[in-house]
Image: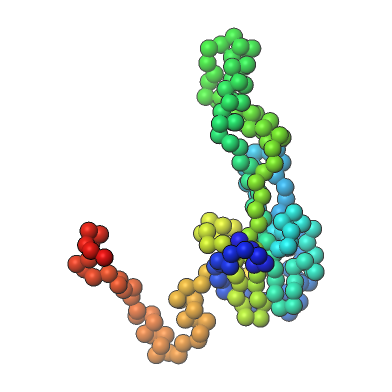
Length: 213
């Protein structure tokens, strides 16, 4: 999930919209406003995402030198999430429930009381743990209009698309045969042929799962 190290598996996007001449001046304030903020144990939010430095997942104090590199915009999509091991949560929840039953002198708790108790236990456990933190690199070549995001998860791609539009007032369009054809600039004849094209299966009608390879 990194442009600087590790695997080079990525997804390609095309940036659409009018890019400002002074991109840094027009967007730096919004980029900083969309920087990742740490999760707080007392809050109900279980997950949070935002920008971070591409070089340091813990660095969210973004400035021009950390984001703009010649014709490139480089950022990390940081995702923080509370991950509580289920056995740990169940053990603490069981102890808390027994204590409440004993204190109130009842045999069972109602549905709402159980939900409230579970939330209380979760928040208490969060104070003893650190959230899971990961960063996925995002690199945009402003001159070519091509962006690379080092994840192929559709769920995470939606996060970076939403954050990018919020920060730059531009759109990230996933690469596809259609977008590639549009960017290539087909002539009228080729465009008509392309629009009439239909998906074609490469599997023969008599193929089935039980046949020989």
